[in-house]
Length: 195
Image 1 (cartoon, rainbow, N blue to C red):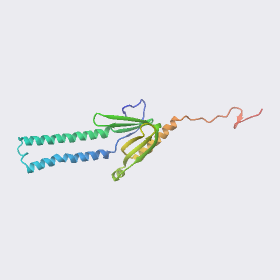
Image 2: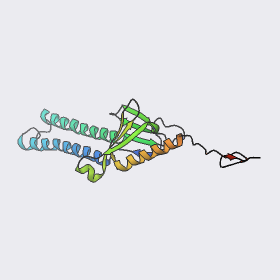
Image 3: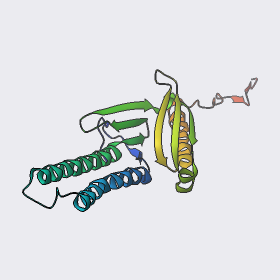
Image 4: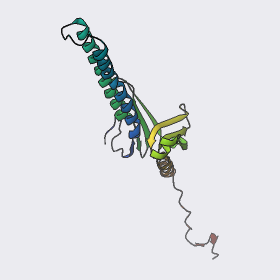
């Protein structure tokens, strides 16, 4: 798995996207919005004479308006998919990278070293989020950015626990191990033998 700014030999532990239900909710509202032109077409054809003459200016304008509206719905659907798919949080053995897509041509990449993690909390709000097991993860940091937030991610409790375990492993690997002192020759348990 490759991501922008990946260091050579850097191993990806977790790749996290928003829960799929977030995308389904956006698609649902776009589908409801897509019904509007059909309703307008049916109302105009039933109660007016505009759509009966296909060569009239009124018919052409209505068809063009409905076509533009449909193209906007498809565009918003595409933007929703791009935003969902390209918003990703990457957790490696050394750091956490948040890649957030903003629209079609803007992207923000933020990273946090695992040694700067102070606390990880997760929260789930609402009935649907509880049933579908998604929520937010907040990582308290020691630095300029006080919180690093993963929004609407699946299994927030397990993911938060995994991030804390990775933090503990990282800190443990960075602290130098002190070796136990070895007894000197001719000594027994720290006392010197008398000759």
